Image (cartoon, rainbow, N blue to C red):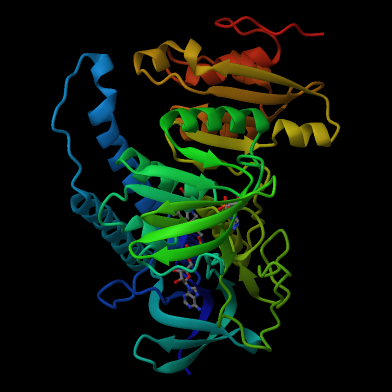
Amino acid sequence: MSDKYDVVVIGSGPAGYVAAIRAAQLGLKTACIEKWKNAEGNGVNGGTCLNVGCIPSKALLDSSFKYHEAAEGLAIHGISTSGVAMDIPAMLERKNKIINQLTGGIVGLFKANGVTALYGTGKLLAGKKVELTDNDGAVSVIDADNVILASGSLPIAIPVAPVDDDLILDSTGALEIGEVPKRLGVIGAGVIGLELGSVWGRLGSKVVLLEALDDFLAIMDKAIAKESKKIFTKQGLDIRLGARVTGTQIKGREVEVTYQTSAGEELKETFDKLIVCVGRRPFTDGLLSADSGVEVDERGSVFVNEFCATNAPGVYAVGDLVRGPMLAHKGSEEGIMVAERIAGHKAQMNYDIVPNVIYTHPEVASVGQTEEQVKAAGEPYNVGVFPFAASGRAMAANDTDGMVKIIAHADTDRIMGCHIVGPSAADLTQQVAIAMEFGSSAEDLGMTVFGHPTLSEAVHEAALAVNGNAIHIPNRKRR
Ligand code: FAD
Ligand code: AMP
C-alpha cells in the first residue's frame, strides 16, 4: 500500500488537471492519474482537450483560415497573391508542436504546485481506494480521503459507419488527414462536424455535412442558427438537414454513404474520406468497481449533485463524465469548485452562464438563454439585434457577416442571453458573460463606454437596441 493522499484525481484533461492543481494550491496532498500515451508510448497529460480536441482543432482552423485568406481573401485589400500553397505535413507538425508544448506545460505546472503525476489506469474501488495499473502493468492500491473522477468522454461510434482510421475517421483521425480529400463527407453538423468540415473545406475539399435533424444547430438561438447556416452555405459547405446516415460501403478507395431524408427518400453520396462526428459519450469503461458506490445515470454519465458530489461519500466527478455541456471550461470550473469544497471553502458554480462557441469563421457563440427558451418559460423579454454589416470596424476588416443578439427581461432589463455569429464572436460573447455574471442590465451595458472603432461596439449597439436606443441602426418600435 502506498502513501495516503488527501485527493486522488483520475484523469488529467482540463477538468482533472485543473482540479489537481487547485487542490494542491490549497495545501492538499494530491495525485493525478493519467492513462493517455503519446505515439512514443509515454504517459501524457491534457486529455481530449489538449491532445485531440480544443487545441489541435483550433490549430488547424487557424492554419487553414490563414491559407484561405492568403489564397482568396486578400484581393479586396489590393494585395495580389499567386502560388499560395498549403504544406499539409507542415500544418500537422505545427499542430503537434503546440500539443507537445501545452501537455509538457502541465507537467511543469504539476511540479510547480506539488501534484504527484502518476501514469497508468485508475479504477475506483470501495472505500475511496484507487487501484492503479501503471503503464508497465504493475498494480498498486492508493488510499485517498477524496477521489475526483475526471475520465472524460469518447467519440460516439455508430454501427452504420464503423471507423477504420483509413477512409472512415472519427474526430481524432480527422486531425491527422495527410492530404486534402477531394470529397469529404461529415456525419453530424454539430460543433465538431462544422469545425472539422471548415478546416478541410478551406483547404479545398468539397464538404457535405449530413445531419439527421431537420433543424440546424437545434440547441442554439434560432435566428443565429439560421444566419449561421446562410453564411456557411455561402462559404461552400453543403449542409443537408434531415439526412440520417443508414449505411456505408467501402468501394476501393471510396466510401459510399447511404442516407435517408426526412421525406423518406433513400439517397447515396460518394466520398474520399468520411468523418463521423455524432457526439461524444461519457467514458466510464473500467473506471468503477462494482462496489464503488458510484451511480451512473441512463445516459452513461456519473450521477452528481450541483456540487459534483457522487452518491459515494468523498467521491466527486467533473467534466465530460457528468451532466451538462461537454466543454473544457465547464469541466475546469467544476474541478476548481470541487477542489475548493474539499478544502472547506463554500465554492459553487454558475451553470447558467457557460459560454458555448463554434470556432468556424465567423465564430458562433452564445451564453445564457435563447429566445426560444425565454419564450417557452413565459418570461416577458426584449431583444436587441445589431448586424456586423453596420459596424465600421467589421467593414474595415471585410468581415461583415453575422450579428449580435441580446435578450433582456422586459421588466428588470436584466440580460438573459447573448448570441452572436460574427467575427470574434467568442471574445465578444465573453464580455457579455462577464456583464451577466455581475447581474448587468442591457441599460448598464448600453451606458458603458466602448472604444471606437471596435467589433465590441456591435455588442454596445445590440444592448442599446434592447430598449430601442441604438444609434447606428433604425430601432424597432417599442410598445
Ligand atoms: P478529457 O479531456 O476527455 O480527459 C479525460 C482524461 O482522463 C483523458 O486524458 C483520459 O485518458 C483519462 N482517463 C480516462 N479514464 C482513465 C482511467 N481509468 N485512468 C486514468 N486516466 C483515465 N471544448 C471546448 O470547450 N472548446 C473547444 O473548442 C472544444 N473543441 C473540441 C474539439 C474536438 C475535436 C473535440 C473532440 C472536443 C472539443 N471540445 C471543446 C470538448 C473538450 O475537449 C472536452 O469537453 C474536454 O476535453 C473534457 O474535459 P475532461 O477533463 O472532462 O475530459
Ligand atoms: P454534436 O452533438 O454537436 O456533436 O452533434 C452531433 C450531430 O450528429 C447531432 O446533431 C445529431 O443529430 C447528428 N447525428 C447523429 N447520428 C446521425 C446519423 N446517423 N446521420 C446523420 N446525423 C447524425
